[in-house]
Length: 340
Image 1 (cartoon, rainbow, N blue to C red):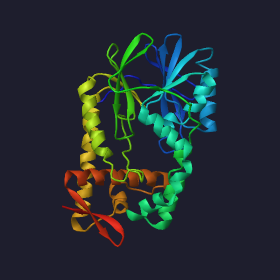
Image 2 (cartoon, helix red, strand yellow):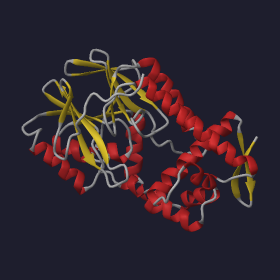
Image 3 (cartoon, rainbow, N blue to C red):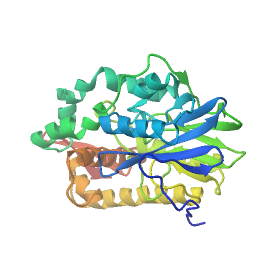
C-alpha cells in the first residue's frame, strides 16, 4: 500500500483545520530548517484537550494567543497532553498549563527529562560534553560550538509545572467520547507517547512515524553507549502489530497520511541503508563518528544541524557495534570504528 493524503489543505498561522470529527489540527512555527510543529485539539468532556505545546519563545506564545483569540476563542481547555520531551513539543508546556489552568499529562520519561533540561541547562556546556565530541573525532572548536550553539534549542523551554499525571504503555485514556490506547516508544526520545483510537481508526503518532522525514535518532554524552536505533526499530515493529495499516496517522510534523505499515517499512529500510553506508566507509580504514557525518549527511550543516547529524551517526555506530558488525578501537585518544 502506498502512502495517501486524504487532507489536501494545511492550516495557516492562527488557523485550525478539522481532520476528523472533534479533532482540530494547528501548526506552530519553529526557527529551524524543520520549520513547524503540529499541535492538535481533541474534543473532551467540558472543552478541548491539547496535544503538544510548541517551543518556548515569544513567537510561539504569540501564535498561541492568536489561536486562543481566533478559532478557539471562548473555548474551555481540560488538559495538556505532551507526547515527548523535545522542546518543540514540550517547551511551551509550563506557560500553557499556567495560562489555561490545566493539568500536564505525559510519560514519566518525558516529564523527568523536561525537569532535567529546565534545572540544569548550563550542564550542556560542561567539559564532559565537549570532551565527548572531541573523543569521537570533532575538533576542539567544533566540540565547543556544538555543545553551546548546537544544543541551544534544548534551552528553549518554559518552567515546568510542579506536577503531572503519568501516561503509561497499555493504559486506556478517555478523551471525551473516545477511548485511546496509550502506546509508548523509545528511540527518537525516551518513552514517547502515542495514542490510538480504535473506534475512529486514528493514530496520533507524535514523531515516531512521519511522512517524508525520518525522526532524529540520537546518542548524547549523558548515555554514550545507548542503542536508540535498536529501540526505534523495535518500536516500529510494535506499532505495526498494534495499529492497522489503514489508520489515519496524525504526526508531530508534516501532513496526516494513510499507509502506516508501508511507512514503518520505509523508515526501517532507510536505517538499514545508512548502516550499509557506514560499514562501507569503515571497510578501508577506521573512522571516527565525526568522519561518518558526511557519509550520512551531505551539504553544509550549521551548529544545530551538526549536533543532530553527529548524534545520529553515533546512534547508527552503537547499533552496529551491538550487532557485531563494527567494533570500537582507540587511536591517539580518539575512539574509532573498524569493520569486524
